[in-house]
Amino acid sequence: MFHSKIVVTLRKSILDPQGKAVQHGMHSLGYEAVKNVRMGKFVELQIDAVSMESAESITREVSEKLLANPVMEDVSFTVEEEGR
Image (cartoon, rainbow, N blue to C red):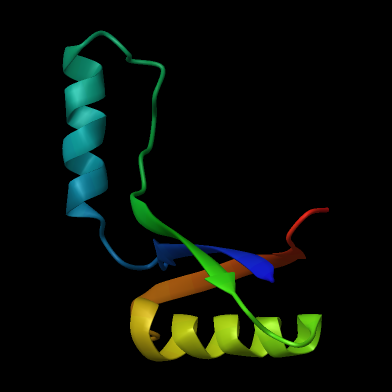
């Protein structure tokens, strides 16, 4: 069994209105030191695969085909064998 952690973020060139709204909220609460906020998605998967390579392949395919819009978003992930 493998555990994947996937992070999906907007590309730097894409405006992030949700991040700006959160930043504005932080400033209104007095956190003026926060200079930039970018929002994203974090997804965890448990994968029953025969090998690390297979788990990585499944994670990559799911990320690229379902979880992220490749035009606007970047994806990074890690895969670990459970129990380690």
